[in-house]
Amino acid sequence: MIKMDNVHKAFGDNHVLQGMNLEIPKSSSMVIIGGSGTGKSVALKSVLGLITPDSGEIYVDGKPSGSGDRDAFLARFGMLFQGGALFDSLPVWQNVAFRLLRGQLKRPVEEAREIAIEKLRRVGLKSNVADRLPAELSGGMQKRVGLARAIAAEPEIIFFDEPTTGLDPIMSGVINDLIREIVVEMGATAMTITHDMSSVRAIADNVAMLHGGVIQWTGPVADMDQSGDPYLDQFIHGRAEGPIEAVR
Amino acid sequence: MNPLDLLARLGRMVLAALAAIGRVALFGLSTFSHMLRPPYYPREFFLSLLQIGWLSLPVVGLTALFTGGALALQIYAGGARFNAEAVVPQIVAIGMVRELGPVLVGLMIAARVTSSIAAEIATMKVTEQIDALVTLSTNPMQYLVAPRVLAALITVPVLVGIGDIIGIAGGYTVAVYNLDFNSAAYLKNTVDFLEPLDVISSLVKGAFFGVIAATMGCYYGMQSGRGAQGVGRATKSSVEAAAVLILAANFVLTGVFFSL
Image 1 (cartoon, rainbow over the protein chains, first blue to last red):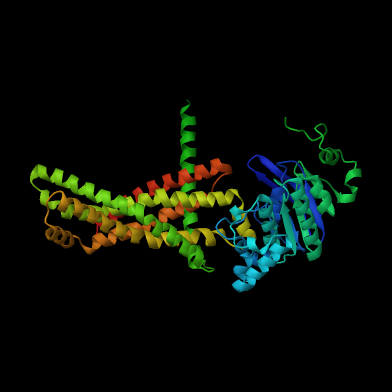
Image 2: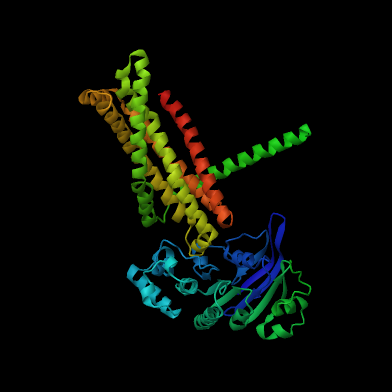
């Protein structure tokens, strides 16, 4: 289980998180929604230790985030970045097997390559992309490679940062289905941040809405449409009028 | 403007400059500590050797060749004013080995390598590849910074040595084929005049300049702001800082070797 307890984070005068509380049960899929600049990515990166909160605590399975062996802690996580964040200089299979080629999870090169190709197949890519460079792939294919990399070491917890941004609706649907299937199949805990409401409905068990630096509403995805929360209601229906001020 | 405001502004500038020096110093110390402890990344290291050393050879060689040739012409013309044209081989040798070789190679490396390292790492930062490295249990200082700085520490002195030789060869070519110097006498004067300390000072300067050039590229790359503007600013600042620090270090090191 992941627990964020009264987490604060400011960048200069910009107080992004102002006491964020959130619990993500084990083996469930939580989707965090909210407007641009509300701190969704900051929350996600705080759990991983990429950003250090100013105050508050983050626990993973009851232990403070990042405590103990850092490599062992990070080995429990996989992450799909918004732009893929693939390493330009490495071929696709080495991107996917990056973690398996070095560090605590190191495997023989041939075995790592086989695992990479198997994961590429799992996300719907043929083995002939394995030796291509990321720049030779389309945006959708890069996203799939990023997804393959996130699951290559079979992590217990997977984070998805805007998984469908920049993709056409059909490819977004494909990625959403893949995420759902993989999370269920692996029994992983998933935390996704997105603006895309079709993603929310496809991926989420639970939804949390971040606004004003705090969780404005949280609950099962099935309750989202009848929440009665004016902020959530405005956001999911994409209305310009409402309590959330749209910058014009 | 109120004198107190002026003083306050000056104070803030001095504090900001000291803070920047402190950040660079801490980054340098962190780099060296990461160079000494495992894990090591031989692939990154050998790629850096290739990028910094082998691929810099043409620009270093051409720069040294033309500078050596121009230096021979200048010394000949200047020496002729007091009948001292014969000193061309000695002055070209000492000028290239003790000063121009290391400084020009250092500046060429700052232009070519520092900018390329800063742009590459800054782009990796902007596209979240640095964050991705961390999530994949890989320390960016160990994976990106340490191999580049170590490669520069090893290759730049070699480049300086090669630059020195090519520069002297440039001077020799001009002196022998344009100024009618005797070939054997030119080479004998060059070899006889140079002392081991001249060569050592050249190579030591090269090692310092290599570390400065690679460290500045890595530092500004890692500190880069967002977007294309952030990458551009990081690249520009890295080359400026590397060039100024190389010239400052040259002054200090020349003083040190002069006192030996």
